[in-house]
Length: 92
Image (cartoon, rainbow, N blue to C red):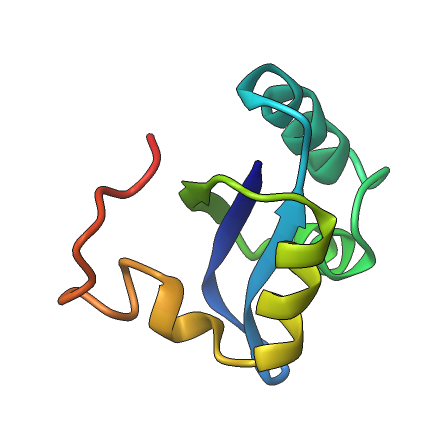
């Protein structure tokens, strides 16, 4: 499962993070890792700068799809906050 995180404010040029976990149960654990500085470095930088963030979208897929989405470098198009016309419900 792929997840997209939206930052409350940009960190340098970035305002999103795309990650992958095996299931929704693993997402809770992974978010705990991100929030405690044991996850992605960009989210650790957000933590240190008190930038809040949350998962705004999940989708089916594995590492290959995650890599394709990251390589596109156009995550705002996939984010329901940045793209309100997106026909998907934000993750809770």
